[in-house]
Length: 244
Image 1 (tube, one colour):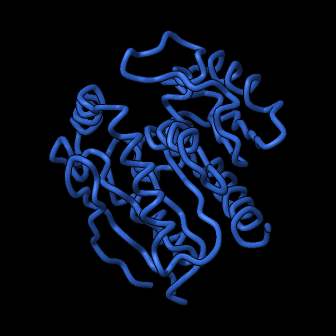
Image 2 (cartoon, rainbow, N blue to C red; image 1 turned 30 degrees about the vertical axis):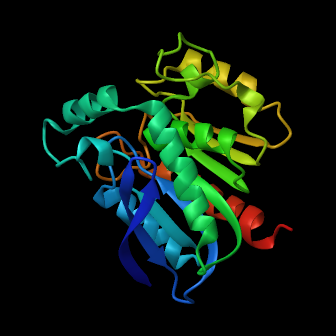
């Protein structure tokens, strides 16, 4: 596996990004969208996991306009991350995601289909990116902006609601049913909007809280994480490797 630092040209300048190549040097593509802690050690490990499965993985630094690659670990990390999120220009971040997806699709190393995998902040952003572009698949882990995007809660003026049917690509959603940030009643409303759609696969995890996949975070749920990852990798293989 090879990892390199890259830049993606945007209308506002070059956006830093990280590229992982599988051992074969080429394969289907995955745009990996970070959680609120940036391109953290955890995100890097998930990128490597995906590259080990044969995918070309591109992870843009979505806080680049704020001068941040990742949030330093420590007792103030969560407050710092939420502060960055409040400063974020959502439409610009969506445009950056759309641009990164096109950059990934245009790369010579990418052969075949291209999907999006996003966690937390990236899970919601990925939904908006998928609504404005044409990925072949979307995996959203506890997308924190989904309640606003789908009109379940009052919309932040900076976030444009898109509706449940705005994403037509096959999508897979994971949510913890003990999520303290996206509460169970809200999660259930999201499920009721998304699960009936023929291209949506939905999984809820009874014991899991928010960010349950992040093994660096205090809410990590090892059992839910392992099951969700098993489902994710099988689903991605069906959508990006064997389908079409």
